[in-house]
Amino acid sequence: MSKNEANVNDNISENQKAIMATSLEDFISEFKAFDANTARRMGGNNGKPSICIVNSERNGKRLMLSEALFQLLESPKKLSFLFKENHLAIANEFPKTEAIKFSPDKRSHIIYSSGLVQDIVKKFNLDYSNRTSLSFNDIEVKRMKNATGAEIPVALVTMTVNKNDDED
Image 1 (cartoon, rainbow, N blue to C red):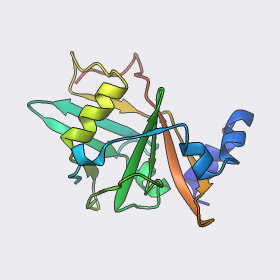
Image 2 (image 1 turned 90 degrees about the vertical axis):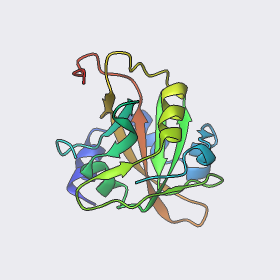
Image 3 (image 1 turned 60 degrees about the horizontal axis):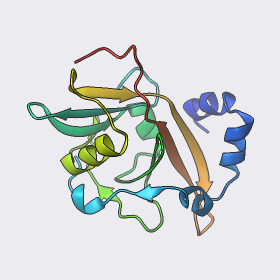
Image 4 (image 1 turned 180 degrees about the vertical axis):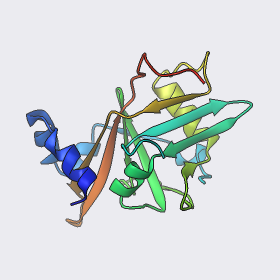
C-alpha cells in the first residue's frame, strides 16, 4: 500500500468502509456510463489526488489528473468514467463501458477530449462563465474486486465546486 493510499484510508468513515466492501459490479450498478463515442481522443498538483477540467474555446477542453491520482489509479493507459448525482467515478476500465485510451507522459496526465469534457460539464452543471478551469480534490480511491476477483483502484470524485477556487 502506498503512502497516499494509507493517508486516504486513515480518513475513511464507516459509510465509506461499507462502500469499500461492495463488489465492483454492485457499486457501478447505480452509475451511468459516459458515451465513449463522444470522447474518443485522450492525450500535477500539490501532491494530493485531484482532477482539473479545462473548458474554454480559446484554451481547449481537457481533463488533467494529478500525479498523485495517476499513481493511485496504478498508472493507467486507458480510463473509464461513470457518473452518479454529484460523483464522477474513474477507473482503468469498468465492466460494460468503453475505456478511453491515452498516452500519458512523465510530466502530465492529460486527456484531450472535448466530448468527455462537454459531457462532464453538462452532467454536473458546471459553471465556467467566469473561468476556464475547475479543480476537484475531494477524491476517495477505493480498491474493488472486479468480476474475475482482481482488485482494481476506483477514484470517486465529488463534483462540487469549492467557493474558494481562484478564477482563471
